[in-house]
Structures are given as C-alpha cells and as structure tokens.
Length: 343
Ligand code: PLP
Ligand code: COI
Image 1: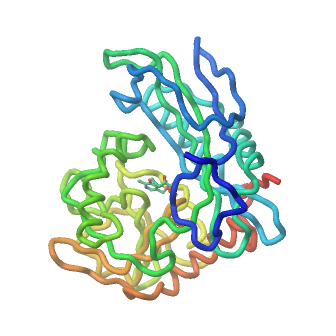
Image 2: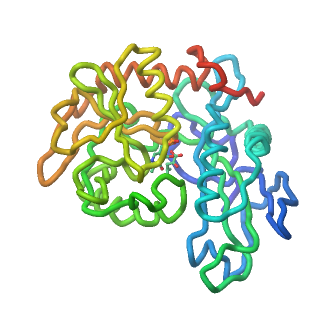
C-alpha cells in the first residue's frame, strides 16, 4: 500500500479508512521485558505462524484521537483513561502491560511524528490513533504467548457513522456480543470478530449497525458494536445502560459528567428495557470513533421506535455534542486533567 500524502488529502471528505502514515511506534516484549521501543516507518508486522493472536485471538486495542485547536495546537482527550483501559484488557488476556505513562508518551510521539496528518481545525476531522497489542511467538497449545508486539499507528478520519450529526437508524440483534462474565468490558479482538456477522446483517437490512441486548434475557439494552448507547428522558435525565458485559466507554463517562455539571441534567446508569423506549425524547450512540451519533430510530421485533426525529438532531444531544467536541478541540474549558497538549 502506498504511503499517504498529506498534501493530497481532502480534509472535508475523509471517511473512516486505514491509511499508511509515515511513522508508527512499536515495542517488543521478549525475555520478560519491553525492548526495541521507538518510531518506525515499517507498517508491516512480521510474526510466527503459530502466534497466539492468530489462533486464539490474544489481542487488545484502544481507540483515541488527536485534535487540532483553532490556534493550531494539537491535543489529546483523556489519554490516561485509554492507558488504564488497555491495562485492564491486557490483564484479562494475560498480556504484559505497557507502562501507562510510557503509553501516553508514545501516543504523543506518534502524533508529533505524523503532525501533518492531524486535520486542520474546522470540520470535525481528527487523527485517529490505534494502539494495539498482540501475542506472538510459536505456541500451539492454548497458552499465553511468550512474546508480544505493542504498536500505535494513526490516520486522519472523518465520521464513523455516515450521518455525522444526522440521525441514523439501528436494529437490535438476535446475537450476543459478550457474556456477563466474559470479555465484554475488555477491548479485545474477539468481541469485534463476534460482532462482524450481526453487524453485516444489520447493514444488509439498511441499518447503521446493531444494538445488542443483554445475553441473559435479551431484554435490556447493552451497546452498539462500536459505541455505547444513551437516551435523554422526557424529563431530562441522561440515561445509559449498566451492564457487566459492555465496554466502559470513556466518551460515555465524560458525557455523564458533562450532562450533570455543564448541562444540569439528571444522570443515571441503569438497566434500560428495550420495551421502555417511550421514556426517551432523544437517543444516541457515543464513542471515540462515533463521537455522538443521534439515533433516529431503533428497530426491535419488527417495529421501528423513533426518537426525536429521523432527520434532525435533538436539542439536548446537540448541546452534549457541542460541549464534548468543544472540549476536545479546545474551544470549551475542559474539566481538570481531561486534555493534554501534544504541541
Ligand atoms: N463500545 C464499544 C464496543 C466500542 O468499540 C467503543 C469504542 O471504543 C465504545 C463503546 C466507546 O468507547 P470510547 O468512548 O472509550 O471510545
Ligand atoms: C473507537 O471508537 O475507538 C472504536 O474502537 C470503535 C471502533 C472503530 C471499533
């Protein structure tokens, strides 16, 4: 694949696609320690055919973004939270932890080295960063790998869901994403492999993605395959599902804080019954890639439940979006410690 050329990119029409940028960070775990850490131009990983990542899915990743501010600085949003979540994911899959402070430094190194690819301020485009750790080395029994590769690569991106701030429709899934005591809280590759077929069925039926229900009763909303779910009740409470099998979304916890402290809404993490959607005036999907994507309608058992509108973002969702993205792009004051400047 040809290296990307920043001078040829159309910043206003970026999708969510892989690009091979000049630099990525890699480190190798060998003989019980991290070594050979630093930037490299090589976008290809060379690994054993018997690597546990290939057979047994020993892989964890993160998703985070770098934002260009109106005064041309570049900043990160809560990167310490991504470092902490990757630690949890690694512990769940018996992988060595890349030290959290070094993780944040490495992210900054990648952003600086590829700074030409951080989109200009103004149209919501950002640099997406993908930290990834995989189990390598030759193993054929079901065991943790003897070696690991940690890498962070990056690319400029636009909207994840095509609508941006225009609502999209979702459908509930007949499939489960994760079990209550499984790996749903960890950001591990297997959860996403399991979501490919349900996601494709949802797309084939004209939906942006599916919303999973709880794996026990198939009654309570879990999350979207690539984002968390929230609803704004008719009496202005920001509600989001509580479940042991969903990803602890950094965006969701940020919105819970901002809804309460900046917008003065009530907030609640609780079980949300798919038969009780009438309580919501607005609903959305939230995440690093998704940012906030308003949900126009949610199909369940053949019925499409519509929220605020299938064409217009609701007023509370819009306020949350403006507050969150304002903080991320440096135009709204951030709560203490949420933003770190790269350059
Ligand atoms: N849920 C899933 C399954 C995800 O893949 C993501 C994306 O990271 C999220 C939720 C949102 O998490 P965050 O806000 O930390 O990006
Ligand atoms: C993210 O929002 O960073 C994600 O990881 C979602 C996705 C692209 C899988």
